[in-house]
Image 1: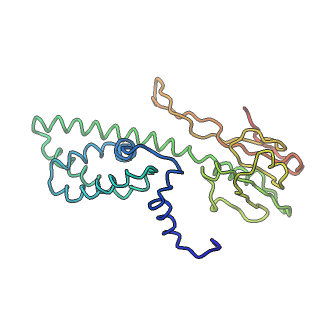
Image 2: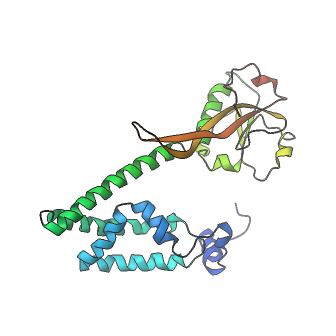
Length: 266
């Protein structure tokens, strides 16, 4: 498949760690794991995990190697949460020990204050989790777009191939091989095709982030998550959605013209 003898895992290690070329995929400051990635992942468990280290010396035997691991990975310019995701269970363990200690001593004056603060943190975590869940649910518009295209564009006993070109943005936002159908559907994920060249290809449909493409007509759009809006009343927070994916049909293909398409509004 690679057309040369290689060990893929070693190639990745060599590229990222030895050659240190991972920065070509973007960089973050040294403190990013500690000030952004871990707080967003752990939420209330993050401050509780720090407290757990102070309350129980046994936790330090587990948490210090993990902190060292995250610290060493922080030296690499390119950072992603998945690189340190294995550290999350240990942080949760430390947080659980702190929560247990606070709960068991909640009747005492000082601990009662910590208990109230802990409940507040848990409620905040619940709210943040709900918001991020709702946002994540709207973060895969391309998968919905391909499913709708299969439903509307399908015609029984169709013997002509239907070529669907999926651009990079769409491939990263909900479309995978599991979404594909058998004949007459055919799929292309070729990258770096200029927009002006798409009309010269034999594509029947396009699933793309671009609202207009020469030689194609916009058939419908699929909305995705844009931002969070605060409002009066209940619920106090709502998700703002806007068109993220556009489905276009080749104007030279008369087959789709007699079908009912939702249309596009821009």
